[in-house]
Image 1: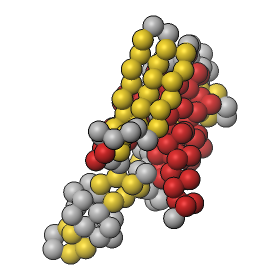
Image 2 (image 1 turned 90 degrees about the vertical axis):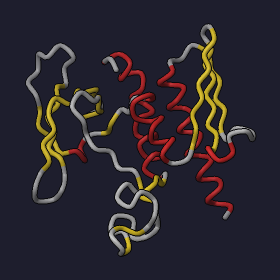
Image 3 (image 1 turned 180 degrees about the vertical axis):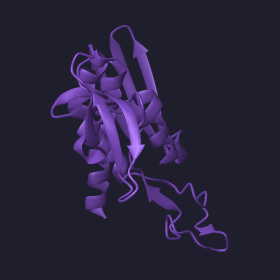
Image 4 (image 1 turned 30 degrees about the vertical axis):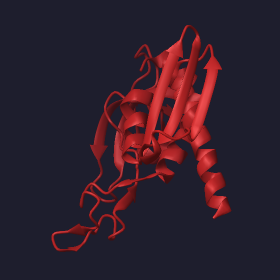
Length: 182
């Protein structure tokens, strides 16, 4: 993702992270069985699902103090399991790097590398169609792929990143509505 693309995706980033953290994905420790080495899985506590949590990676774009920044280094801290990250705030590399904690930044998730795999793990299928200057995004529940889509977003003159971000936002609203009805 370029600096310019990250700036366009910046308004959607906090909401996208919030929605994705609410999704439940298959536990990677017990592989969705709920049992690990003959006992209840310590990661998911036997529920077979866990919440997604962002982990910083070298080269990812983030928001820091309302500016787009590039992660240039990631160091796990031993005492509290947090990460200490190095950021390059200026796209030209003029300003020196800044060392911050992971809680001080908001990730700008790339639709293809980050958002799509998380949706897939949570049981959703993302389909994107683009024609001319029009983009159409659908989110289906993977088990109901041949039924009507859960979310449809169709817009003109926006990037795929923006279209996917709007679709994830709509998914969050849909999940809120269904949880309020129950």
